[in-house]
Image 1: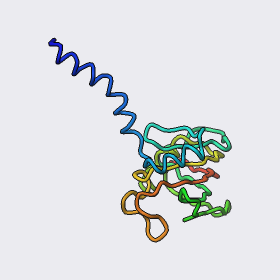
Image 2 (image 1 turned 120 degrees about the horizontal axis):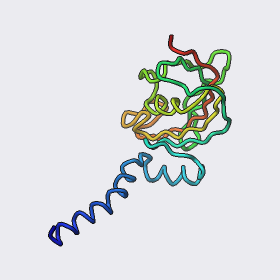
Image 3 (image 1 turned 135 degrees about the horizontal axis):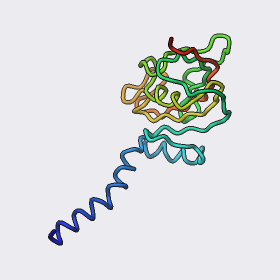
Length: 156
């Protein structure tokens, strides 16, 4: 192998982890500064969702197709609430991994169990992206949700 080709391969191998990490970060830089200051201990999924476990539930992980019942408060990074459903007697209900909710929810809820209460930080591209959800959610908004899984029904 020529010295030039060796140098190119070595550079590619050195740069690959840096590039892969950069590709996984989906929160815009200005938002990322806020997120890292406000929630420094948040864990991060491989798709870029950050989360803080506030209360651990019990039982098996939620599965694709489960009917999931949750209470939640959704807000922008500024703290402005854009949506909420806090009535445990009439929780928000959706089928997991069926495209009924934002992609970030379909992904992160598969890591949760009944009774879990988590704070979620969803990057724009896993939420409403460029289009936003007018008039309350602007384009490219990083979203913060406080969610609790209050019940599930397995797909039968």
